[in-house]
Length: 80
Image 1 (tube, rainbow, N blue to C red):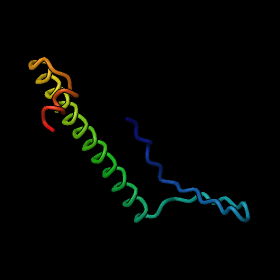
Image 2 (image 1 turned 90 degrees about the horizontal axis):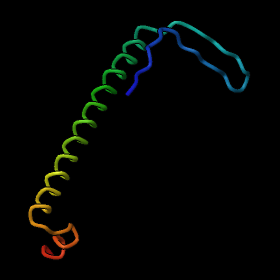
Image 3 (image 1 turned 90 degrees about the vertical axis):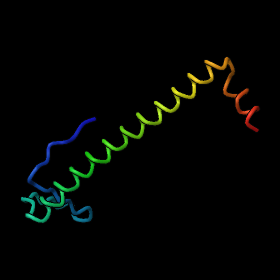
């Protein structure tokens, strides 16, 4: 997982004219960018947590099937 280093400059490109403007970000833009970066870290952390929980459930189900000596398909037949 990687994060880019936040810059304080913003590049705007006018695709019609080809004009390129490089300028300092406004305080509002910097605040919005900081919030976006923090929210992205939270989302990535939540995704990792959910993935870990899902993996633990799959491993627990597999352990139960192994103890019973049946496959997932056989368990599905028994439950249907």
